[in-house]
Image 1 (cartoon, rainbow, N blue to C red):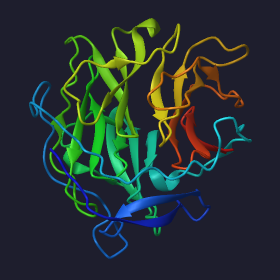
Image 2: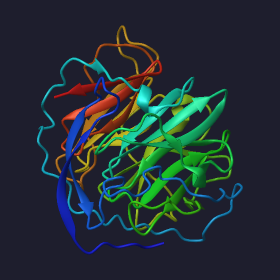
Image 3: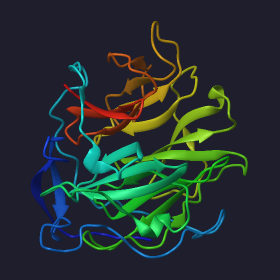
Length: 325
């Protein structure tokens, strides 16, 4: 499926959830259509439809991320992160649910992955221009249980997610314009063995990043990528040196920083820490990763970085944190 947008206007969105204020100010780009909710349209991003079982879906999936060039990086890669602050996230999940992923879209919507009573689902919460009290399920991707890890494209016209337990696959739902429901999902035809899982999708700089899992062991996990214009291909494995449980990639809008969760040894650290690799140009390989200097809370994983690369959001033991450069 192929969508294009002809012109754009600039807008600065303050991402706010709850009166206590979960704020990640991010200047971002919207199309000629108003952001969801800004003109009285339905902001729930709810649609009807079903997820195909297993290997169904389109033969070829082509997604053209028609967003304008990413905003100018406001924080250099060399800038250190400050002290993490716990972000009040009650407005991003339903009562009794555990937060598994948070991605703030440029359409004023927070796309969240939640788990409740053993069931994984995706939801959408309006956070700009004003927050809603609770997120609403994205019905098109929740027609069957098990949808996880939402990943909107930069133009908010495609929503990637994973589904499946032992051998997860990545699906995508699309729409022709913001402010309307996403359509029925299609399987992203990444070329892997039937026993190999692909999961943890994240979209940045016209590229789908994800985790390839050969088996349950940590050494069988690797960060991979494919261009959005060529998803029916074998994964491009990103060389990050000897790894251990590398997963959950989060990439800056300019494609120059890669954050990921790993069980690589960190003295005094918990089971899983956040690591970072950088490069000077998107045509070059990422360099040797290093652990991000953050207080070690436990089972940390990155979940989103702001378009200006100044704020990183991450999850630790079920709580959402943000840290600013």
